Each structure stands twice: as structure tokens, then as C-alpha cells.
Image (cartoon, rainbow, N blue to C red; front, side, top):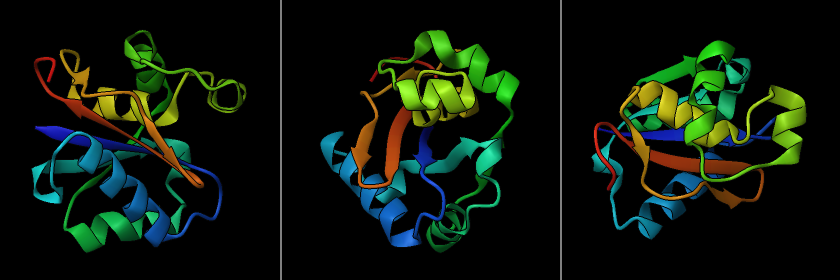
Length: 128
């Protein structure tokens, strides 16, 4: 199972979310069909662009509570001071992907930032 974690600035467009997802998938040599769900911090629940992207792809959107983001923090690969100031975690995309994929999940690679969106891919179970 592969989870795509999404972080974004406010007001992000669906097209920006899809572009970041596609770029992260291309870097990992994966396809959209390999993704089982989209995850984002719960505070992003009102972001239409994220929910519209998940709906277009026919994937569930999991909104990860703050406590679960924090629990996944030690497994991240990158660190953003901006995200630490806003969410108290090193990476919104990475912690969302890891938390939604489970305790044994590992990142496929570091988050990819593209414009106003970051995307990280996590695989349940083992390192890719």
C-alpha cells in the first residue's frame, strides 16, 4: 500500500496537487494506480484543491489528526521551519503519509516540493 501525503499553502488548486503528486510518483517510478489513498493534516480539511484531487483520482482522503502527525515526526527525512512553526512537525506531507500508512511505514523518498504543494510517498511495511 502506498500513501501520498500532501502539504500545501492555503487556497491550493487541484491542478497544483495533481502536479506535485505526479512529480513525486515519477521520481519514485510509480504511477497513480499505485496509490491507495491521499493523506493530509487534519487542518487541511477545508482545502478544496486537496479533496478535489482525491475525488478525481477516486481515492479516499484521510485527514490525519495532529497527535498522529506528531507521532510520525521521528520518521521524516526533511525539515521545514515554516511547517514546524505552523504544525509543530518537520514535514506536513511526510508525517501525513507516514501516519496514514501505519507504524511500520517508511518513506519512499523525501518530500517533493512543487509550487505551493509538497508530496511525500510512504509504503506500508518496508522500505522501498
